[in-house]
Length: 592
Image (tube, rainbow, N blue to C red):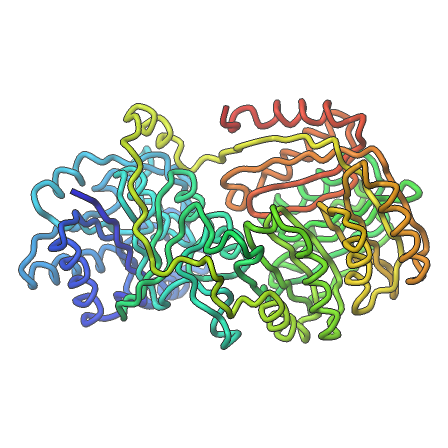
């Protein structure tokens, strides 16, 4: 008998009528021949009410007691759901996280799952029950109740689907699937029938509220198909699996992260260890850094820019200033009126021309690009917040995301269940189910770097540069644009070594036309990439990477980041040493 995990969020169980409607969906699935596990969130705004009550009692309540309090919200929901199922003539049993056996670490309010027992759930399912699990919660080794933090019920659902080897995990929410962009921001947004784990990870990190990054990381790690569906209609929704909607289209989605703040640290010493010191000082304040951009240095100095959520700007600036003696920077600048626009797609890894097309549509809309960072499947640019809505519309239209690809699936297809996995292997992996997993550490020593320093900072510059390079048939890998002083910017890119001379000729020609102050070329560069699952939720990955390189005396010359990969450029002769240092640093989490 097949097994389905169904998760219902707070809006889906906000009142008694909605609870009964959710109960009917579960019963219908059971009558269709499935065993059903439901994961239920707290009702509507119940969690907000509990947080407010705590604040009235104690402005800084103990984290352990907050977990004790917040866990009651889900307990109310699961009990009412079981009552609703019984009233409709079916059998159900509600269980808290502790009763199921969801073991976590002891980090209250944001615990990580260590393991999940399955025996009790399987026995109840075999007896014909619909099992209703409280989302968002678990229990630590001292039997303290813990909660999983933001997106916790999604995480519970996907984790249960993983340990139970479920055929699918259905996420019922107040939207009817995943869209090419947020339909609340753009009326032309189109619902997709299928999207890949990596694409969804990137979009989730960019503010797509349908799924939380952490639960998608789980799904990718354990091969769990996720079916995003509406609680209120029977629209088929979207499947999140390992394949994209289209194999021919390079871009599958666009996103706007509206409330960003940009910090630029100018004139830091271009020596080993600076990146580590900077981001270590920020990490001590538990601040999540997003876009990270470092251009190739000049005269022994480099600029580093990065973005943080706008509400964390003051805290971040304080961390940077506290590290002033170590960083020895010339100045710090910031801008809190910026937004990030991104395009995402697995097809970017195989198809060229995506970057110059994106830059061209923004230039045609007279939108200036302040920063650029790229990965294998994402291009992000920073623009003025007042231009953000127009920029999103321009890239969405430019990549024809409102048009269904010719090779898109015609319907949401059920994903065939893989053959039975070795039980011992599954149990072993689940003992560390939320641990960071590094899939690969790769050295690419076929790269060279071209840098255009202090080019005019106005609309259309990036488009002209990359159109000129594309016209020569030169393939560009990493692209990094940093904010420069005054009305100027610094732009760096990597190309294959065999194309270095040709790319330099093009760069000098276009640089002369644009009035660039200097064109630099490093013909022998090495790209080191760390990729895996959990890079977003395990914020120390970059720090561990920079520390390992610093301890080996290796200077980082370029940086860019994504949800599933951190890339750095170092001198070519230091590539092998860098690879060895990173393999050693990540040996405990590297999948062999």
